[in-house]
Length: 302
Image (cartoon, rainbow, N blue to C red):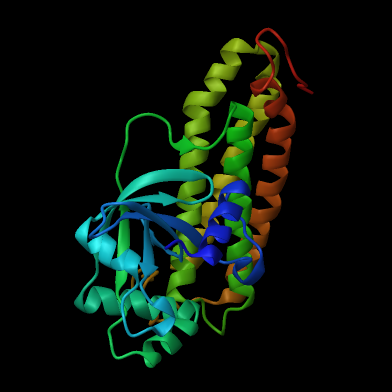
């Protein structure tokens, strides 16, 4: 039977591009669609997630510490191919249940980010599974629920804003050192932003330059801002990867033995936030009217 509470979250999630209120406001949520182990029917469940690098995400089959694994876990064990909705993107993924040290390390990262996971584990005798969802590469543009190029840009920008707000809040709640999971979140954000700007530089901007020559000054400014933001993300990554004095080699983002000062990271994140917000706002003002204009029409470019 459908869960009315979950269904309400699903509908709100889809209606608001991944944002929900109530008890899950500000939480990291995805919608995970699995195939029923026995029924073969498709079932969608809101689940918490953590970044795992390289486009992968982790989900935890806690069932709030219940004695049995949740249904969605049994489903993906039987049928590992799943569908993931992030709010901005929808994509297919392959589910891998982690075992041994890989599972323990991933669960420890989650506990460090939210001690509630340890409470769930303490309530049950079962070992709570951790699953990594590997995104399946696909040809063509990403699957985004947008009816126009302008709406596509706005959704992507808002997803970056939301992720950056989550990271800032997590840094604000950090202890004396930056946790491994938060470091991975920061690095994942930086990589995603780099990929987005690279796509604009090699595809969208040349197209707009050819179709709207008057946009040349705007596109030049946006390219320059991409370079400045790339410098800021490089500086943030350098801070995250910096080892304390007296240690050798770069820090491992997943190794809590390599401490990083959250105050230092917070300063770099604030610098990046200010530059990125100004860039996104300017880009939206200048390009969305043109991207959404009827053929032959032109929007503002000043």
